[in-house]
Image 1 (cartoon, each protein chain N blue to C red):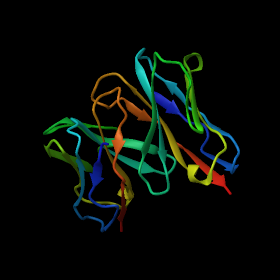
Image 2 (cartoon, rainbow over the protein chains, first blue to last red):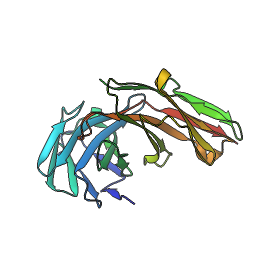
Image 3 (cartoon, rainbow over the protein chains, first blue to last red):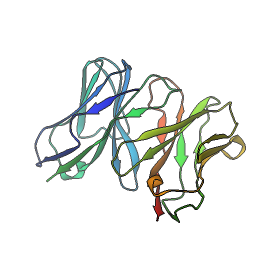
Image 4 (cartoon, each protein chain N blue to C red):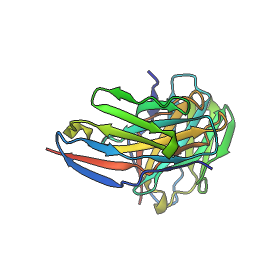
Length: 112
Length: 116
């Protein structure tokens, strides 16, 4: 089975802090994704990466950046956290467009 | 552009009732894939099923069944004899286009509550 591990289930940070969310997968998949999930809005794609050091903006990249230095690890960075970034963040990986995405357990991030 | 609509925001049923979750999709691609995911209260998204655009056979897995109809662009999900453990948010998703995944689109989800 694919294993996608997110570093924290719950995280509380303060406005203006730099926040790192880490995601590690064990299936050697090239494609990795970061989504945020908000009530009534479903899943919205923030960034994705299709290879090491490669990244593409999703639908809502503003206020976020990403890092993919190793194939198995994809990090989401909130450069200066704001309260409107309080959300559930989900990392996913998949092998190709005809395959399902596999998700981590999610990180519930609260920005105070 | 791809789009997935799940018109039912929330559904409540009593245990042992049957329930159908609707999913309508839009795409111009002739080759595409449809998915259903379950998100229990614990938060993780669990993959349930994948269906490609060339296979319109319905599928049954235990109490779960899926009805794919290209003529109406629908991929509906039915739970028979629902149980409390079925309470979750269910997402329908569509994947089309290139291999990079930016065309992997999720619907807004349907929250199902099964009452004892």
